[in-house]
Length: 518
Ligand code: NAP
Image (tube, rainbow, N blue to C red; front, top):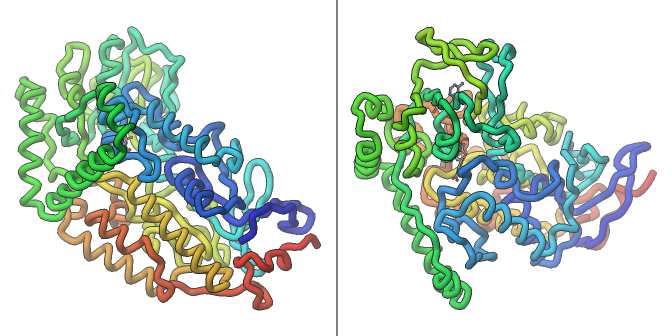
């Protein structure tokens, strides 16, 4: 394995820096991969980060009330427990701070190229490497890791007449903190996981709050509390205690899989949510409008104690008639009622199955992921893609979760990526890519596991479904099953190739021939 970067020529006339591994993104996925690379002694890698800081979605989502709805003891790296979480569900600034500390303490920062947006990444079949064009120049890499996350590109729907709006508007993941909401008439579009967190925060400040709800979410109570200083001292002094807490949370959350897979069992969860709704919203008319007509779990289950009560406040109105037209300073709903508004906040989610980066990553033959996927992403083990050699996608197709921590999934995928590197080094192969039949078999396996689950049989439309109607986002089973399936690489599932001229490139002995300056 090479442990140094070199100036080489990527294409005639353009100097490119070569690196063994190029990682796109510095959120949980990118940092996790980088830390694990360093821990096994690799220094020849670069992280491309388009922003000026690390953190991914936990940097970008700074809206009021932003917090994680998975407990922090679990929603953190297994190799970097943090005894100092102040609450069971940490607020965004703490999670972001945790990621920044991980980047610093594990020595990853020198590897990050900030403000480097990846514009194109193409597999060069002759040179057997990735050519990565960033906003700051060209690079080449033996291996490419896409760690750009599923929730990185805000989705803003095109509302009729929106171009005429003269007020303020922004997406929840691009919150404009300098805009003072006090005394303003505000419309919120969307009632998903983000909106239920910021609505109760802004409600006391604004003059009027119109919540445009398309589909009511299922909301569960949030059993949250602050950790005492004594508890934190104990976690610090006895790390086993924290590991025990992590394991208990993990095991409890895995139980939800029974409900998702067997709709009858989900009735229990449904009952809890209905009781929570009844307790929070005494008005039966409003309550009826807030009662979902689909099975619980079909969309992400939300956890909040203050969202539903916020909807009962006198300055809040729930609008369920949709948006018919946006005018210069108002919104007209589907029943023709016009409401003056100063600001529109989009809590409308993210481009999950149609991420722009997929249109910029080209495999063998030049086709992009977007072109190959045709609206329905597929990958072997959610991580590697046939026709895209030496590419690893963290949180790729069917690795999202409705019940547990995605950091667990990311770590399982990183294990896979590292065992691929080990395999390549040990067997002297330069190129590895999943066999099409292995990928097809895995996709078929996921589809079989998906059958009858709430995500396909739960009578709802959700962002879990892609534009072909297939669920290409969720892992439909216990997460330990995913880990067991993915963590170790089975060479029989992969096609491998050597370097041009038959010289293995990735065993650290010969790495220069194909890339030497011309
Ligand atoms: P989301 O869950 O996708 O919710 C989007 C909301 O916008 C939905 O209510 C949706 O309605 C509505 N919407 C979308 N397009 C619309 C349109 N054209 N007109 C009217 N309404 C429209 O987005 P999010 O709340 O940003 O959350 C996204 C994901 O981020 C979550 O599912 C979760 O995985 C993650 N997240 C996690 C946390 C956490 O605590 N860990 C916090 C926030 C977010 P429909 O339901 O009818 O589609």
